[in-house]
Structure formats: structure tokens, C-alpha cells
Length: 295
Image (tube, rainbow, N blue to C red; front, side, top):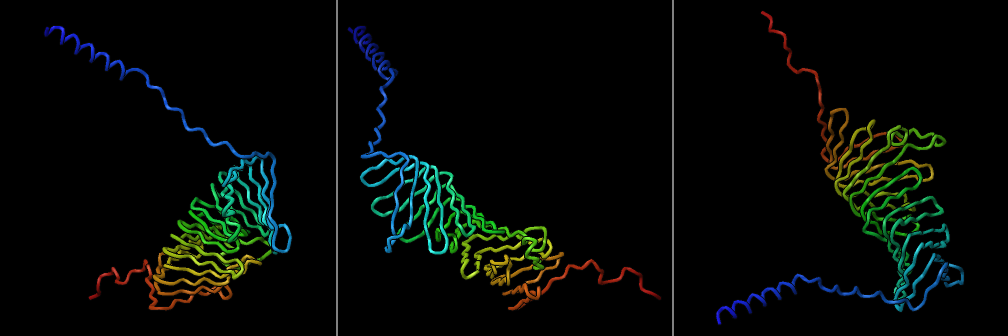
């Protein structure tokens, strides 16, 4: 009897092991919903209140669902009063209820005013006329380049906020400007970095760098501050003046200047330090002679 019980238990054990070892049937992945309508080589547009064409979106294909439209090879134009904007991306999504467009992969924004932005994805809100992303962005306008993580601003790139880890490169002015501003006349570019945000307003011709700002111009030294305001004349690609605020520090030739505020004027090439300024000079001259005292 005991022998039969052992055989039965052994059989049950082997059977359960075989069930566990047997390949299990994989559950089928849920099928993606079929679009209500499909279009190839599509084009749709919107009109302004005056009846003029305000924007146009073209692409290779459009899968139309009840709430969204999935797009490929997106090419969009926005027509403004002063300049036009072109936005392209490999893929996109159009939200019917909000009117927002999300562009994905190889996104490029160009303006007829000379601005260019590249990123991996971008959200375009046509209602508020704003673009935004949390991804790394590269921006170029004339002789100024910027790289940062995250952006929000106008589609024409005239007023933007770069959120984090900002690096700006200002290259020397073109020869026809004949600029004698040391911030531009040097062969070496001026590099400005900050933790962010950086706020640029091209119409007011001002850029405001925030948090841990550093300006590196090899011939003019290195400037540090908590906050820095740069005032431009974008028509001639010149910086008119720079104002640094909070924990100012200028390092040049081993000498260090400290101040609460500093103002650089391009007109007279003068730096004015205010707010408890002090200077630490690194001198190699010996203050005490090594010669023995005379008798």
C-alpha cells in the first residue's frame, strides 16, 4: 500500500513538473485601433479672422482617429505679419480638441528672420502661439549659437526662455561690420554659460542669464556672477553693454576683481565695479629683499 502511495506521489510530481516546463502560449499583443480615415500626401490649413491663410500642415500620411490625427513627414508653415515660420518633423500628432501639434524626431524650426532651432521633439500650441520642449535644443541666429535643455517661447524665436544647462557662443562679427568691440573682434568666440533660465527678447534686444553665470573670453578674461544682463544691437551684431549682478568676479592674468555689481560698456570699453569692489593682485615681485642686511 505504501509503495502505491509513493508511486502516485511520484507520478503527480512528474506531471506537475511537465506542465511547468511546457511552453506557455503567449498572449497576443493588443491590436492597435484602426483609424477612421487615412489620407496620403495630405494638406490642411487654417484661416485668420480676416480670412487670410494663417497656417498650413502638409505630410506624407495622416491616420485620422476620433480625437487625434497621427502624421508622418510633417511640414508646417505659420504665416506671420513680419516673418514666416517653417516646422518639420518625421512624425507628429494633432489633437483635434486642443488644436495642439506634437512633432517628434528630427524636428527643425526655421524663420524667415534667420532663426533656426533643432530638437528631438516639440509641442506647438497654435491657440497660444507658443512652442515648448523639455528636450535638448540647439538654436542659431546670425552669429549667436545656444544649446540648452528645455525651451518655451514664440514660434518665431524672437522671445524665448531656455530652461537649464545653457551654453551660448558668440562668434566674432562679420568683417563688413568692422567691429572693434573686444567681445566680437577676437578670433576666439565668447562663451557664456549658466544654470538657467536664459531669457532672450530679440525685439527688446536683451538677454538675461540666471544662476551661476560665467562669461569666458580668452583675451578679456573670465567673468562670474549670479545674474547677468546683456544688451545688444542685433542689426550690427554688437553687445552694447553687460551688467552683472551678485557675487561678481573677474579673473584676468591671475588677478581677481570682486564686486556686487559690474557694468561693461562697449562704447568706451570700460568696466565699472560697484558694491564693495576689491582687487586681489597676483604679483611675482618679492616684497622683502633676499639681500643680507649691511653692517
